[in-house]
Structure formats: C-alpha cells, structure tokens
Image (cartoon, rainbow, N blue to C red; front, side):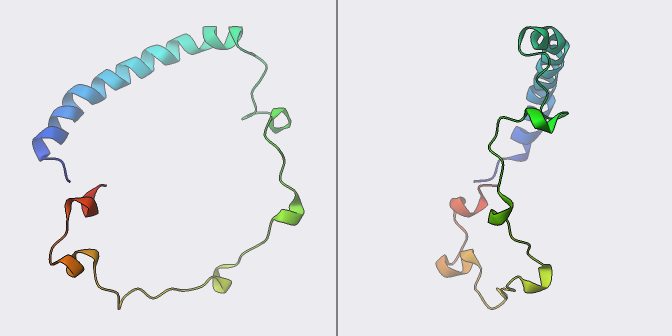
Length: 93
C-alpha cells in the first residue's frame, strides 16, 4: 500500500541525510580505492576498454515513431473498476 505521510517525512529527515553522508564518505575514498583496482580501466571514458560483447549491426533495426503500433486503451476499464475498488497491490509505486 501507500506509505503514510509521516513515514515519508521522517525517512526524508533521518534516512536521507545519513545516506548522503555515507555516499560522501565513500566518494572521498574512491580515488585511493581506484589506484588499487585497475586505475587505467575506465570504459566510460574509453569505450575500447569495454569487456561487454559488441552488438552486430545485423541484429539492430531502426524503428521510426510512425511505424510503431498505436494502442488505444481509452475503452479499457481501470484496474480498480473490476473489483469495485483498488487493492493494495495497485499502489505499490
């Protein structure tokens, strides 16, 4: 189900700052860590270093927006309409 507002407020006041502090401390330690763990390996800067298999161009296909199927869902009932009201499963996000 959905979270009460007070839970969201408390977590954003307590948990978020703690998470940010931990992230900040980890970022400070990253340069020393990277020196010990493949310092020259930076595939985000040098794509030729990537260890992922390359895609063959023959496997790729171009899709244009006008060729994509348009699905009209306006006539479909809402998920909650079938049961009379929405269940807790409907509001997971």
